[in-house]
Length: 139
Image (cartoon, rainbow, N blue to C red; front, side, top):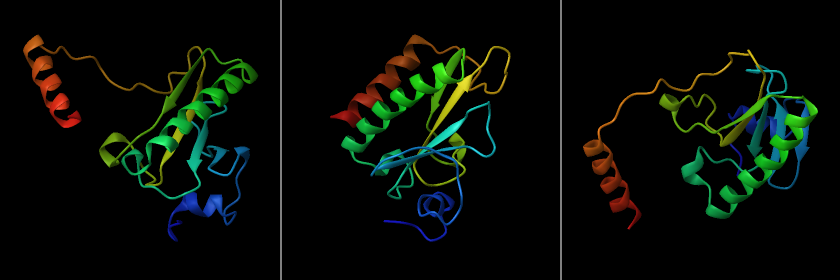
C-alpha cells in the first residue's frame, strides 16, 4: 500500500531521486538530505505504515536486525565514535513524515547534534504507578 501524498512513498517508487544505501523487498535505506551528522541515513519501510503501532511484529523484528547490521557497517565505514538508532512516533515525539522510518545516525566526538532529554527525578511511588499501568495493558 502506498500513499499518493507521502514523500517517502514517492522516494520508494522512484518519483523523487535519492542516494540509496541499501534496498531489499521490504526496506529502502537512503541518505538523509538534511542530515544531523555526516552519513545520517533513513531506513524506510516499502509498505506505507504511519508509525510503529501499525507494523506487525515480524516486520518490527526485521527492522532492528537490519538497523543493527547497517549501523555496524556505517560506524566502521565512517569511523564514527558512536551511533544513534532513532524511531519517532507522532508529531509530539518529533515525527515529521508520517511513514514508518528509522534514523541511522553516526555520532562523532564533539558533534553536539542531538540531545534527547534532560534527566528528571522520579519517585519510587510514581515508578510503581507507571509499572502497574503498563502491566495492566500487557495483560
